[in-house]
Length: 166
Image (cartoon, rainbow, N blue to C red; front, side):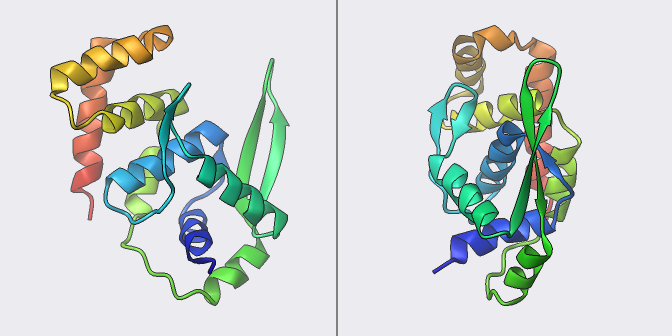
């Protein structure tokens, strides 16, 4: 019944604190695009791929006490910090869910900004298109982000690197 929750708990057990809702959304999406079997459906939204299902599951896991969500005030906005709790660790011990290893993926993504992960996830969202059309699409749907050609090249290099991890 809580198989998808357990998969997410495995994600949290493999990561340190996840800072930012956007970063959390992008990390799960990128893992999914690396063939890690997360079930959440994604649609394209303001900040790239977004899953309402993921938002609801995270809220449920916070309500169950499996994940702590801390609201932190920044200069002119709030951000959220997520961390697995002891109850979350206990829950995971009793789950039979096993995912392919993705600790190295998380380490690589954790070192990136949410802005960069937004770029990478947007590129992956349109990956069925030829590369030049993806670049064009990024400039259209992410015009306000003003991604440079260097950043897009870095995005492609990151996608290749993260997909080579086993």
